Length: 155
Image (cartoon, rainbow, N blue to C red; front, side, top):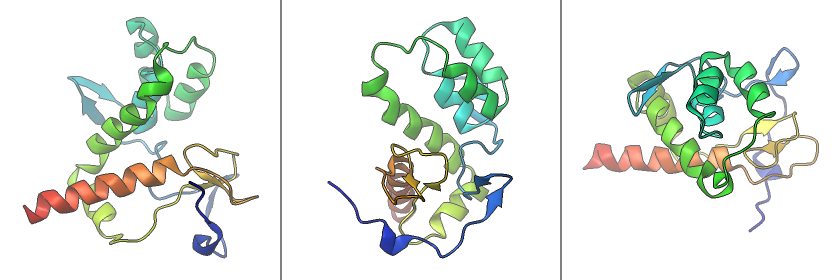
């Protein structure tokens, strides 16, 4: 299914250096704990899960969020990565967005569309601002988690 993103596109974007700044960035340092292990950010967890090698996972999780992405670009992906990557992302996002301040920020979006607009050509997790094309899987995952949080609050 193709979504028409243009109707949601802001007239301007805030930048962090040369990159578009998104309030829900996976690169933001945010200590999360998953399965008894600590990770510096959602990005560190996600990138480390691309490998099944415990030493490689540790190297990736110990890096900065941006360095973790660069390291993971050079490794052999686990054979099931295509099947598990969305669930891996959602597990990391749940760990981050269950924290009170983050949870409140996510819930404060109400029913708004969440789109990971980007200028780094990510058409899988986001939507490219140059051509308004992308699957926006990160935005979809955040909206799913927002709905889970709403359901949990309303019993």
